[in-house]
Image (cartoon, rainbow, N blue to C red; front, top):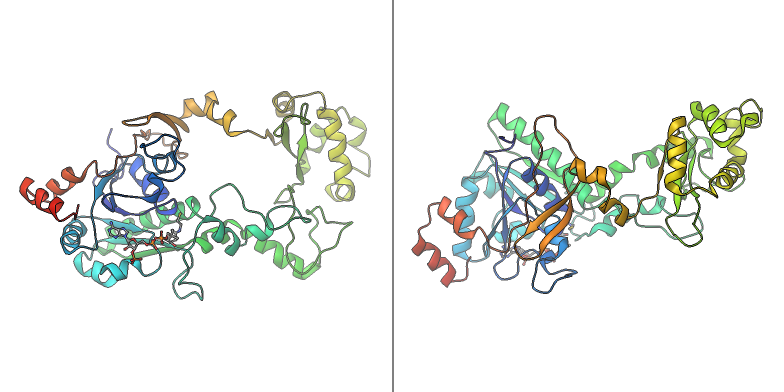
Length: 416
Ligand code: COA
């Protein structure tokens, strides 16, 4: 089956997570993604947090599936020459080096545009161009702090907290993928490439937009009624950390289920959706709450919402998280068990849908990865293993017209 991005050649000059997550997605959808790596070492994640000696770490394999690997020293003149050839024949170059690294290598946007005016040049940086921090190198947690996620995550009596979800890295990569696809469509109309830039700070902030909503509401009215601080606690002039409160108009909380004393994940998330109040009361065996003025409306419930959650925990005390959800789902109540990575890895539905996939790898044996979360009616992305370092060097060089002797010469000077 032909894939929508077949025929699009991408120079993948990315490393660690933000850039690789973007190019991996494009590779799943059919793009020919050539990962350019420094000879001898490659992407730093090949070696980071290894669980099998001498085999690429899962950090690398889970972010670089479906790609080719070309080793190339792009600081050597011979390497630069190869890169120039590749640029002339590619559609997209994606990079997430530290600020200025590509310019220092001699491949500024102007130079790239001169070499191939149709090429899209896509970059991830910590901060946007012209920002007063645009010289900073940035990793995930730095971005979560700079983008507003950390100050609004966690509990009010604890420090700012980092989310385990890669809001700074993979999220930025997803934004970049949207930018690249948009620029490719734009190129169909104009015939011209363009520069696409996404900053990690902006991408985190984009996901935190409801907190910017809350900042403005707070400044206008002085309180936020859906936060646990309301109505008994204090508000300052900045959006507080709200623990596990629901972020929208629906109050919710993480509630204990049977076994919570020994199992740190024996919890469900329970949402009190306004119009589901009647079914909630029925499910909990509290029909008297349905018309009680102290419970009937969301406004009436809010001052004692934590007492309500306590009552629900009483109901949950003899039910596992799975039993509880099985009962509540019949009443159309938005809820879910708190699932561990172990449970997710073994979830038959996720295996069947291709969201969790087992991939055979030449050196590791097979490993689990997260497949495409985007499902299509006409295409099933097939996940293949990440490449070994330099696995496709000869193949890519041959496709650029290099002879066996040329390749030998490049190897002699350690350019590939
Ligand atoms: N051949 C020769 N040199 C190469 C090369 C190759 N194939 N690939 C990379 N390099 C060089 C670069 O030219 C650069 O050299 P220079 O600094 O002498 O100019 C160097 O390797 C890479 O530098 P840098 O990207 O700054 O790496 P780092 O390990 O110091 O920093 C980050 C890592 C992630 C902090 C930094 O890349 C960064 O801030 N990136 C942008 C934000 C980002 O994506 N962060 C999230 C990562 S998940």
